[in-house]
Image 1 (cartoon, rainbow, N blue to C red):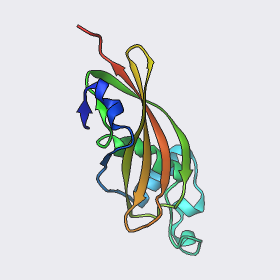
Image 2 (image 1 turned 90 degrees about the vertical axis):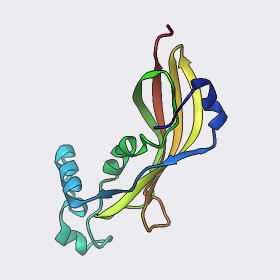
Image 3 (image 1 turned 45 degrees about the vertical axis):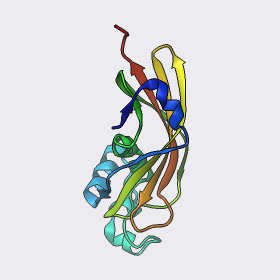
Image 4 (image 1 turned 30 degrees about the vertical axis):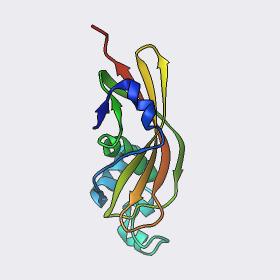
Length: 155
């Protein structure tokens, strides 16, 4: 993850800060997510029925795709030097635009959108995230990802 002095973060607002590696979403991951969330809809977990459905094969849950954003985006965000902890603070404007078909590869593209001091020692960082699907023109998901950086105590 790229780390820069906290005071320099605002200088990068509007810039693409990185792209993650490609990540394959396979049927095992979809099935495991279905078990964890108790969402066993056939379009996710029944390859035979899904082959006859609107997408021609199973698709990942939208929330599975969203849940991977934190992991995928970790290496793509600009983060302030001196932080002792980063907390997922939430997401805004989440939109699922294109289903992720089984065995597709996805990655995140991150653009720094905003940086605000939430309180002394806490910096709220907003990144516009796009989850791209390899070989597809339309992304799987777009969202604003909020990360709270907890800064260390000054010496």
